[in-house]
Amino acid sequence: MISHETITGILKNYDKENITIGTIGSHSALQILKGARDEGFKTLAICKNNRKFVYERFHSADEIIGVSDYREILDDDFQNKLINKNLILVPHGSLVEYVGAKNIEEKFRVPLSGNRATLEWESDRNKEKKWFKEAGIKMPKEFKSPEEIDRLVIVKFPGARGGRGYFLVDHKVGFFKKIRSRGMEDEDYTIQEYITGTRFYPHYFYSPITGEVELMSMDIRYESNVDGLARTPHWAFKHYAPEPSYTVTGNFPVVIRESLLHKVLEMGDNVVFASKKLFPPGMTGPFCIEAICTDDLKFIAFEVSARIVAGTNLYIEGSPYSQILYNEPMSTGRRIAREIKIAIEKDMLNDVIY
Ligand code: AMP
Image (cartoon, rainbow, N blue to C red; front, side, top):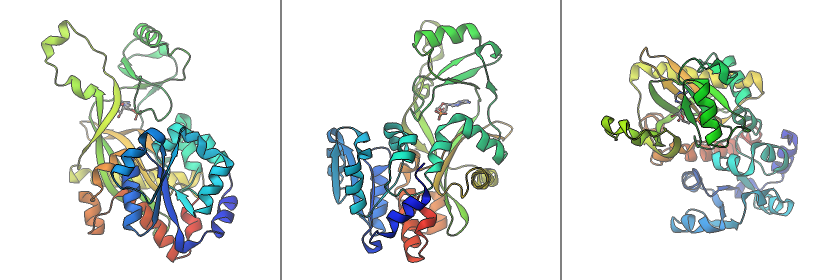
C-alpha cells in the first residue's frame, strides 16, 4: 500500500489556498461536487466520455475530464496532472468497483479523503467479518459449504456489485442447480443466513478532528426485482415463480423509531473503535452499516461500506438527523468537504487525507 508518508509528502507541496476536490462521475458525485463547491473548493469530475453530459447538464464541476476507461486514472501522467491541480479525490463505490481497491491502494498516489487502508477492509468479506466481530456486532450465520445449508440462505458474490446475481435457496440441491444455471460455479461466493426484518442503512461520519461519530442520515435500498415482487398478487405465483434478485436501483429515505437510536449510535461507535484496533489509525470520514432490525428489535449487520454510500444522495439538502446536528443543509458530501476545510484551518490535513 502507498504509505501515508508518501501521501503527506505530496500534500506538503499542495497550495492549501487552492485545493480542488474531485471524484469519479458516478455513484454520489453530484452530491460530493455540490458539497465541495458549497464549502468554497474548486471541483473536478472524471467521467466516462459517454457520461460527461450528465455532469455538464447539472453544471456540477469547474472542470470535467473525460476518460474511456476509469483505470486511466492509474496512468502516471494522469496522476501527475491531478496532483498538479492540488487534487484531493473523494473515493466512492464506483471508484472501488471500476478501478479496484488494490489498484487504488497500491498504484494511485493522488491524496484521498479518508484512510486508504479502509478500502481493502470493506471490500474483503473475511476482513469485514473480523471487523464486525471485533466491534461486537452480530452478523448472519455463514455456511462454509453448500452441504451445510439447513435454512433459507442468501448466496452472494464478491465486489460492490449492488446485489447483482444473488439468489435465495434453502437446500444444497437447489444451490447447485441455481449456481450452475447462472454459470457462477467458479466464482467466490458467500452463503449467508437470510434474515427477515426491516432494513436500515445508517450513514455515519467519523471525524478524527472532533473525535465524534455523527449520524448523518439513513436510507433503505430499493432493489429490483425483490421490491417489485410485493406488487404481484399472491395467486399469480401459482403459475409464475420468479426468483427474487437484489440489484440496487434506487434509495428510500427512512428515520428509525427513536427508542432504537441508541443501538444505531452504538453500532457506529463500535465500528470506529474496532477499526482503530485492526488497522490504526482506523477509519475516518463517512461510512455505512447495512443492517436488518428483527422483530425482537435486534440488529444484525451484513455489510460495512467504509466510504460515502449512494443512499446519502437523498439528503443533498440534509436529513432530519443532520439538520439537528448542523442547522444548515449538510449532506455527507458537504461534510467531507467541511472536514477538509477544517483540517486545512487547523493544519490537520494529514489526519484526514491518506
Ligand atoms: P449486499 O450486497 O450485502 O449489500 O446485499 C444486497 C441486498 O441483499 C441487501 O440490500 C439486502 O436487501 C439483501 N441481503 C443481503 N444480505 C442479506 C441477509 N443476510 N438477509 C436478508 N437480506 C439480505
